[in-house]
Image (cartoon, rainbow, N blue to C red; front, side, top):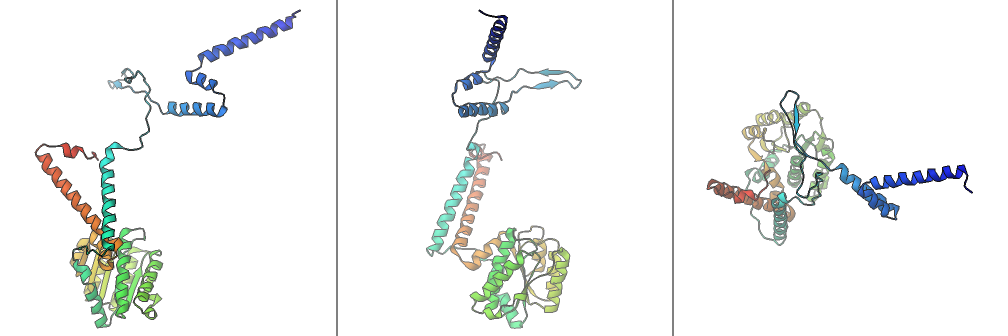
Length: 347
């Protein structure tokens, strides 16, 4: 026999069943799909994926105003499939950059074949650079006069490409100076460049077969202050009466102060930098100047190593291809043929 209490419990249970039935019916389709999954892991994975899609989905419409507080909204954009929510799709490759991919692959192939050609002994032509050809004569002049050589590897840090190129030239200059038993002075502004320059000069003396002539004090640190460093270098030029001065690396406003002092002492000066603003000062005050990429080519010119030489020749061929492409595109666009230009990305 049912009691009042049993009737109340049955009614409460029926109400709960009706409530949850309505809740389930009102749930989104994705929740219904998730509830059909037996694994909690799969269920959470589906809900999380849907959540990520929803937060990255957008509706688009245009809101216009007359500037007086009145607004009109256009209808929400609807895709051809009837959906109003726009979800960005992943794209592993940008089709607009196909030309860039082709250029990278072509350059990599050129580098590989040029290096292999250099290793097989093929003679790769490098345009003569006067500043590099005169390095031996400048060192020989210092040897004949019995005066030291000054080599300034720029004022920038080791992360600068120009500094690395300058240190590569320092290796060849130091080796030649060791062969001639000529003293070389290398003042440094960067404390990281200092130990690297010391090791380069030391190794150069060992390669020349004269390790006993290496003086660890010939490569030294002055200061990190720009113009204080220049004052120290100028003092060295005057006191030591250097016969040959090399400036290889990155320079700034101090370049003219150094080269003017070196010119006044009568030293032969060879400079090299990719700092466009300082090139005019080097050209007017130095005997020879390596301009821009000539500084980078100097290491290949001096060392003749297949790896460096092959890379340099690959760069030259790639530059030639770029020039030909620009000229061809200019000619075709002049006669209103734009198909060639359309192959390339807009930026």
